[in-house]
Amino acid sequence: MAQVLEFKLPDLGEGLTEAEIVRWLVAVGDVVAVDQPVVEVETAKAMVEVPCPYAGVVTARFGAEGEELPVGAPLLTVAVGEPAGAADSGTGSAADAGRDSEAAEAEGSGNVLVGYGTGAAPARRRRVRPASAVGVPSGPARPGAGADPVDQEGPVPVISPLVRRLARENGLDLRELTGSGPDGLILRADVEYALRAARTPRMPEARRAAPVAAGAAGTAVAAVAEPGVSAVAAPGERVPLRGVRGAVADKLSRSRREIPDATCWVDADATELMNARAAMNASGGPKISVLALLARICTAALARYPELNSTVDTEAREVVLLSAVHLGFAAQTERGLVVPVVRDAQARDAESLSAEFGRLTEVAREGRLAPADLTGGTFTLNNYGVFGVDGSTPIINHPEAAMLGVGRIVAKPWVHQGELAVRQVVQLSLTFDHRVCDGGTAGGFLRYVADCVEQPAVLLRTL
Image (cartoon, rainbow, N blue to C red):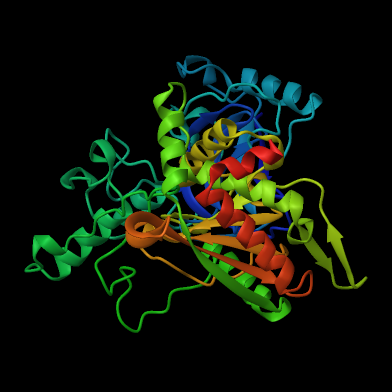
């Protein structure tokens, strides 16, 4: 007789108490293996795949795509053991699945996230006959738990499950779209444009949303909608602040409430920095990004001005100086603004920093950042130059003490060696917590960064 086990939404860590179902990876009647991902959920920190700790046949799913569930709520039920007639199902017996489940539980597999379980390679999805045909109860599935109205799981050039979901909710067939991303990749902007075009058939093609090209620092590529239109939402529609957007809203609000911030800025001649980067990349080997060079300059500056790599213990009324620099960098993705963290940035050279920025940016674009990738930062580097702007007054990423903002690097008239010349100029801005230091320290930090940008040889003193 098959035993039906209930799998609940596990504790996702980092104080998270709920998650939104983005996409079901299995259906009722599917055979699952131990630690096989069964559902993709979005938390306030990241998109993660949740693995099932049992092996058997899925008998019920709870929660529709787009629904938010609290930790501990039922996700699905799995029939384990030996159902009648399983021997001729052609997909392996549920008795074997039950033995796999028992073995997995003996090894400690349970309600855990991918990467924290048994480590066995997850089996791919397998279809079997309906659950009732193999002698297990079918179980009630909630509305929305069945097949998608538009089957878009075929060879469609889409990476983001959020793009698929947006198209699915609006009945849009992705196969009819031409992506504006690399190699024809369909971006959220393409879906939003198609939906707007359907509502306003005469919209000129010239107004089609296009991705913003990566700037000099080479961080995230942000897909932007038509000017004046930030989302598909109709006028007057209420858009809930939840998931990443809600977490960002809460964090920025807390930063403004608790941190008495101040901002200083300076224009710098980045011509020599750009020349140095060109020379590095011409010598062969992995390419070095400008963001990596700026990060290396930041770590050197923080070694001189450690007050800016700190946090404030409000209860003890103490400033806690931090030894390691865990460098966050702001990246705009289809899910909103995220800040991946490069661990121990002070111990990395420009090549290592460039590689890590590239890896985390790619993972961020795919929506696959783990909660650990988004927490523990001690200082943030914000390259808003990718949006084509010169300056900004960044909001500190609480509980950090400072953030360096970098505008676009653009040709401007500049007095160089006593004569007017066209140089590559960038505006640098530093927002800092006035509790940890005064303007002299903040100004000293920013001036050192600017000096290194203008004369990269200055950095040799700290190498």
